[in-house]
Length: 382
View 1 (tube, one colour):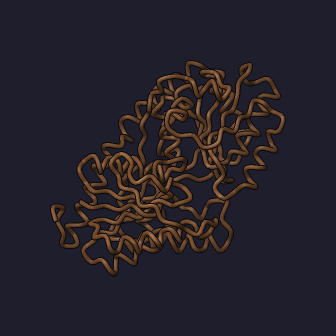
View 2: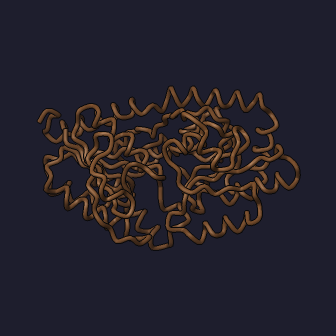
C-alpha cells in the first residue's frame, strides 16, 4: 500500500507530539512492507535527508510565519500528492485537514484520513481570528475525510456527539529507550534522581510558568531535597515572548535549567534518570511526553484535565490546572513519600505497556486504512 502523511513538520521528531506520532507510526508501517512517504517542512527537516527508518521523506517549502507555516506547507504537499497515486493520504491535526477536501474530491480511489490530535483553538498562542479558523478546521477535519481518527477517548466522544459520525479512537503510544550511559546527563549538570522533568513546547497553555513558580516557592520554603533541580526540555513554538517570560521568572536561580529541544539518547537519559515527571498543562489531547514518562516508570504529577486522566487513570497524582498551590501540594506530597513514588511509577509503567504500545497502534491504523479503502470500492492489494 502507498501511504502519505501530510500536516506534520517532519521526521525524525525534534519535538512535538504530532511529529513523534507520525515517526513511530510511519516507521512501523514501512517495516510491515508498505511504501510510506512523509512530507516535511524545509525549516524543520534536513533537506538532504531523503529517508529515515525505511520511510521516504519529501521536503517542501512553506511560508515560515506563525500563521502560515502549517497551512502553506500542507497546500504544497497536497498538490504534490495529487500526482503520486497514493492509496491513502493521511492528514495530521485539524488545521492541515481543512485541505483534505481537495484529494477527497479529485482522487476518488484514494482513502483520505485525518487524525484529530487536539482542540487547538484552546491554545493560548492563537489570537481571535486564528481560533475562529481552527474551530472551522475542526469541522472540516471531522467531515471532509473518509475517516477521522481521534487520539483520545474524550475527543472521540466529543467529535461523535458534535458531528454525528463515527470517530474511531486510536491512541498515541509510548516506547521507553534505555540509554547506554549518562554522558548527556552529566553534560547538563544533572544527577540521577535529583531533578523533576518537564517535556513540553514552551507555549502558555502547557502551564510551565505555573510549574516554575511552584518549584521555586517549594525551594524557598525548604520543601525540596537538597540540590534538587527542575529540568525543562523543549523550545518555543512561535512564542519567543513566553520563553523570555519563563527565563525571567527563574533568572538567577541555578535550580531551573532550560535544556532546549532534546531527542534520541539525550532525551532517553533525561527520562530514565528523572526523579519524577510533571505535566502542568491546561489542555491536552493525549500527550506523548506523558505517555513516554509512564513508559519509563516515572512517578507523575499532572493536571486533572481529561486527556491526562485518560492516560494516567489511577497511576499518577493530580492537581488543579492553573492552580499553583494545588501543584505545590502535589509535588511536595509526592517527593516526601518514596514509597508512593515507587508505587505510582510501577503503575504507570504497567499501564503504558498494556494500553499504549506503538506496534498495536500501527496495526489498528492499518486496519482502518483497509476498511476505508474497502468502503470506497478498493482492496488493499490493488
